[in-house]
Every structure is written in C-alpha cells, then in structure tokens.
Amino acid sequence: MKSIMMRENTKIIQIGDKVIGGGNPILIQSMTNTKTEDVEATVSQIKELEAAGCDIIRCAVPTMEAAEAIAEIKKQISIPLVADIHFDYRLAIASMENGADKIRINPGNIGDSSKVKAVVDVAKEKNIPIRVGVNSGSLEKNILEKYGKVTAEGIVESALDKVKIIEDLGYDNLVISIKSSDVMMCVKAHELIARETNYPLHVGITESGTITSGNIKSALGLGLILNQGIGDTIRVSLTGAPIEEIASAKLILKTLGLRKGGISVVSCPTCGRTQIDLIGLAGKVEKMVTKYDLDIKVAVMGCVVNGPGEAREADIGIAGGKGEGLLIKKGEVVKKVPEEQLLNTLEEELKHWRE
Image (cartoon, rainbow, N blue to C red):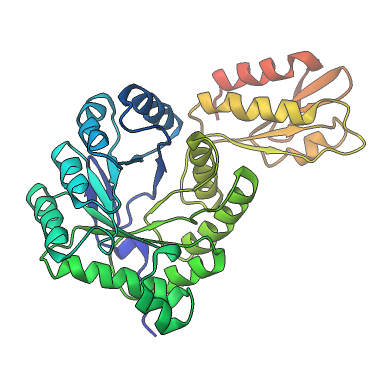
C-alpha cells in the first residue's frame, strides 16, 4: 500500500499573501453567511472573523452581482478571499477578474469541457489556485452505480477524476477538498486520497450540525485526520454564527499541538462542593483571555479545597469559595481576594504577566 503523503511534503500553494502545504502552518477558514452582494455586511463579518483568527475567508457567489462585489470587498479586507462557485462558469471567471484569490469549483457541475477550459485559462493567466471540491452528496451517477452507494472510495475517485480534468488542461495550482457528513467515511476518504496525491487538502466535516453536535463531529473527524499528518487547511462547519467556527478550529489545532499561542483555559466540572457560579465565571474568563496574546494555561476552579492542587499544571489559576477566592501560580496560593474580585484579579495578573 502506498504511504500517506504527510502535510510536510504536500505541494505549496499560494492563496493571496498566505501559503498552505509543504509543512506550513495549518490555516483556518470560514465562510460568510451574509449576502455577498451586500458589501458592507460582508466586509463587517469578514473583519470580525479575521480578528477572531480566521486566515482565509470564502464567500458564496451565486449571482453576477456577487462576483462584481468581490472587487469592493477586497479593497476593505486583509485576508485572502475564496469565491465559491456552483453551476455557472461565468461567475468563476468574473470572480477572478474582480480579485478573488482562489476559486472553489466542482468541474462536474459548471458545464461542458469548453466551459471548464475557459475557467482554467483565466486561472492560469492570473495564477489563481483552484480548490476542487467534491462532497458525498454530489457524486456522479456512474460512481454511485460502481460502488452501489456513497463510499469513501467513490468520493476519492470522483475528486481525482475532477483533478485530472484540470491537469489535462495544463494546470496544477490546485487544492483538493473532499467532504462528507459521515465522520468515519470522511476520515477514510482522507486516508485514501493522501496516498494518491501530493496536492494540499482542505479538511472539514460537511453538514456537521449545530454548535454541539457539529463541534463533536468536527473535533473527532478533524482530530483523526490531522493527527495522521493529513490536512493543510481546515474549516469547522457549524450551523451557527461563523465566529463559532473560528474558536472551535483554533481549539482543535491547539489541542492537537498543531498551533501555539493564545491562552488555554481549563476548568473543573461543577460538583456539590461548588459554592460559586463556576459556569458563569469560566465563561467570562474564556471570553476575557482572548484579548491577551500569551501562550499560557489558565485554570478556573470551583473549590478552594482542591483548587490549588488541581490547578498545579496551569501557569495561573483562580479558585472560588463562598465569599472568597484564591489566585494561584504554579499550584501555589499567592493571594486571597473577595469572591466578586476574582475575575478582575485574574485580568490584572494577565496584564502584567511574566514567566
């Protein structure tokens, strides 16, 4: 069996001023849910996502007005923009002419070979990468007949067929995306395709669901794929605000040791000894620490009895009891404060943090 093409050895692709593949950092993507034609709303959302840590943004381009809006959107944002195209090859061409840094197409649904060639010719002229995207729900009839149903093997065959169409037109500035809502099928498909190609892979679990189910499915699927050395850029697809996707993606990468930086918050589960609003406090801490670019671990504990010991592996921690709380460094209690001052005490410590 062929060996897996590890991300360190995948082809390097430039997207705007960012690069993926070849062992470069795994980049986080999301997709706007505004009407792309609404430039003001779309730009506002992109800036919010960028501030949260989004590296590359994708926008739907269902109309010519949306394709033309890309020109104005690009003037106002700082991260690369990917135009998402279905069915109409003219929208792909217009998007590139208006400044898209990359286009996402399925060569099987944008028309005959002459239309595919027209798109590739413009991409080649402008050196714009093409993301070849295939979802389990878009497999061709002959693939379904061959395998009898949707399978990982069928997804991979369909994707490689589409890649060959573009390669035969003399272009290899490509990224591949194969997605399924079936987590284990998606994992298997990535394991298979990573043995067949050196193109960088955009990884995600499509239609993963709401915040809770989507996060669980994405963490499992992305974790199994990324931990094998597969994947160069990711999106956590959630039925929710796009900003949620960024937070989840960052946490998945940090948990796997694939991204450094940013404060990691750990907190204990509530129990009968808890005498403070631990759930509310942990939520406030998690939101507050996003303002600080520190590569440390912060613990939030709900018990002054076990808190210091449980927070020993954290750089800094707080533990709350009835009416009072503790500030903890490296497992040692350094200050006792009134309960209502716990959050402010922690923030003051972070403002002046020194190792």
